[in-house]
Length: 500
Image (cartoon, rainbow, N blue to C red; front, side, top):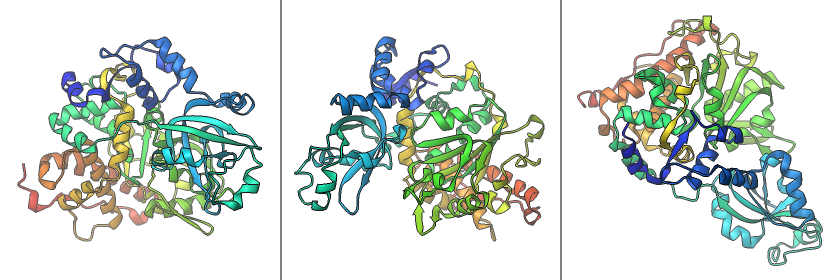
């Protein structure tokens, strides 16, 4: 890959990452998006940075959960203002019109906070853009005997009660992503690279060294398949892989838009909607939910969770009691697989070790595709990026924005010829996966004629069909009703078959 071309095209969105030799950032335990944000802030043109400056910044502005009492002491007792990076969510009270916020990573709930009108008028555009927003928060304290009459001028119902309560207030907020994402520029810039160069760029963007894979394109593409739920709404995948192939890292440490569960107990309330707290669950605030080490996850009520999952995976709608909600988060099941169970064609029973909740064909059918994680090599130093690469924070923001671009699905609908009597779920799965591949590998495609039939078949359609094929075969093992019912052959429309 031509590094100079990468730097010329993406300019300040390229940073020097040295995961192979440097343990500095490992010692700070920062996720990739946070690390690259800091690198962008402190690196010079040659990729050098002062470790003492970075360490001091992290200590000051990236507190840990155990620092929360110290922060409260500064804000409430010492009456100081405190700035730090955090994830923020906003709540607007329908009855009173009051605006509050929560810091979920520190357990600070909206009932103990307030955003006064003068602050809200300045910060609202950034704070309401997402369900949860990363940024630099500045906290202060409004004591019980204080009252902002201007803020509550027309809200008489809150004056007496609200005026007697101490509140942590938001003094200022600066979004974590201060630059504008230019999707059109990103799409156009893809034209400057070959498909091989682009695959290598994508690997570098998520901290992997493309050279470590040699010339094995299949291993590279299998690794990148993990990114499909990052870039396409409600894409549901299952991956089984040997230990040490980097599942937890990619799904849990690269993007700020996803959520990773490492075993433990999962409830319907946590995943979808908590009736007692009246708050939506994980699916509402994330682009994807990854249940890692899925064999070790237990569910508080198997039947309840299975019913909720089936409805959500099918339509994106979840119903809990009288509450009905919608969300766009994809669902990914990740588990380890024994070496003797790995099969290149997926002909072994690979789902036998999954929790009982997933031993039902009607639920498994709602997962669109299967990632053969055994095609991904075990993590080693040669696979760690050491060089110039796309900023992970920038790249994940691009993928997040591309989720809303429906033009790629329209192109896929135009290109794919659906066989007669094709099963609706098979068709949707193939098209959804093909759309995600198109966004990831060919973001420059604006209309069907912009991509050759050969490349569309090789990198999008054929891979999507194989991923669905494995799910369908495993369904046949689980339930004889599906046995022998392979998905039909999806082809490119004859309208484009001569396209080169």
